[in-house]
Length: 575
Ligand code: CDP
Image (cartoon, rainbow, N blue to C red; front, top):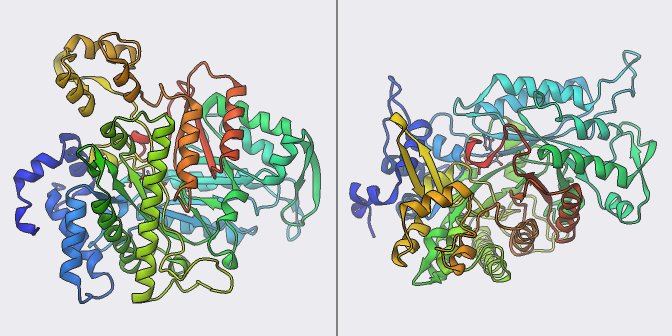
């Protein structure tokens, strides 16, 4: 297969109108007048060529650029947005995820704000742990005063972000983490109750195993002053947990991160512990680490009602080489990030279109079989990526921090391989369900000019409805109005099950899917929303967190339908 076959005709078949619009607005490079001077084909060539060349043209350059081009052009795999936007340009910063340390000193705090600004400028998102900062009334020796505490500093980070658009193309995104045993935790939990505040942050509480044990035993746990290690006071675990649950029930924040579960899987504990994730939670990183992401579009791997594992394997191999190369051609925003990233060479290979795959196979997302298939595919992707990373280590060397005496896995090129990113915008380009999420709606009515209405029907649903003769505009209107395919007698029961959307799938099934994927092949973590109905109670939220923890999830985000006026990081509007 050569580049010759990729003509405009194929392009027209591949990209939807929405995809083309998104690309024109934000991805195609522009000329001096601000008009796009790229097409999907030339964008793919720019990305494929730059990443194939990496530092210097390898001997297999021609083969690599062809393989990279083919996989991106046909939407089998897409790298994260900064890579699509910046590869082969002067900016050249290709990663989406960064974690920066916030040391307990004026110099350290404002250095972190500066570094964060430099990351945002290039299109990356930043995660910070504020857990090292002394609590708000702890003493400051040099001035004999009292400290401002993590929250007042977080407000400065927020203000800085507000003024910097990421690479001019997206708004800045931050994750702010505070440990459950920090003395200021109660203030942190309620900090975003005022919806005017911290709008450039997702806040998450880092929950420890000790806390979960205290919770199970209905006991107390200690709050510890980070600057001295002294126990400040004890709190009832249940009461603090109920605070978190109350706020999450009210507006979806704070999220929870299970920090000890994450550190049990830390591939390089010799370099330090995880303290924070990137903004959407799918990457646990050490301070100053960055990670570039890319997602396999599972919608494209069903052939005659079965998964095409051979082609999936080839694509995973190519994607692994691609993401590893991205590390070498990346222009890092500051030297500390370059140094840490090159030590561990983490990549985040994930998926999108999981729901498309299940629909094509005729399996409901919220079923045992759905979880089994998802877990099998994810494990397959992980194992194929790992085999390729081991091969790359033989060819180019293992990641420098690898230490056979400390690490219980074979030498490989990348300390972490898999994670599941939200794919908020890249899934719009690929026209599939985002990340590992189910579709959010099946029929939508779009109001266009002159009061005209456009009926947008999920492509698989339309195909099925037409093939089985139950398609009618009237029915589509009814599905749009009710927001669900459930309960319409014209739709056969089987299809009602298969076309359940995020709101129709019960919360436990969302969590079990996240748990199944986490256990089967996801090294780092998963960005996923657990959708709860508007009628869900606080008990339901509590139950979700405990179930997620017990199933080995490394973090959890719940969202109760209609609870937040305007969602800051709602998947499709985020970028
Ligand atoms: O689809 P796309 O590659 O644009 O991004 P995503 O999968 O929705 O998000 C992946 C990661 O990019 C997030 O976890 C953030 O670390 C980062 N991100 C960001 O920095 N700013 C945004 N507005 C959106 C995402």
